[in-house]
Amino acid sequence: MAKLCRHRIKLFKGPGDTPLQVLGTFKANLSYKNMDILETFYVIKGQQQPVLSGHACSELNLIARLNSLTVETLDFRTEFPHLFSGLSKLQQTHQIKLRSDAQPVSIFTPREIIHPLMGKVKVEINRKLADDVISPVIEPTNGFQVSL
Image (cartoon, rainbow, N blue to C red; front, side, top):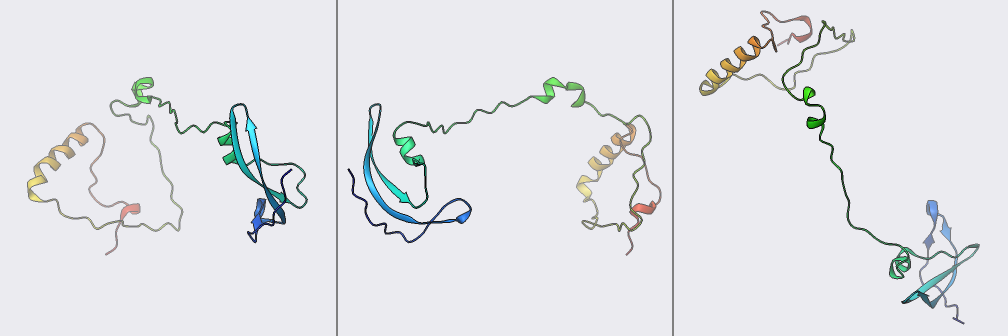
């Protein structure tokens, strides 16, 4: 029979940082199937059931640690091709209502388009106008006026 030794660590904590009163420790050989290990046991006041550490469970092959993960990725583009092709438009007009105390926020200051890109930008704007993606705005609307 193993002899109970004095515990040297001052404080052990349980669930919820509850202090545990360790009465002592002892070492014992554990065997399971063809595995033998030497393990330190902690005797705790008021503990009714013995608890085997995760390390001991792994050493005895009671639990398996798998360091792999299989992830099944779904291909929504293949399953729903109509959602990921072309451009869709809402069938009816929708109105977005803002709170009466909403304040417009400018994230950045608009800058001029540099001359070498001007032609490409005009072509893209005309394409989006023709596809009815955007519509021209002649003057600022109420929600988007920027006060300088």
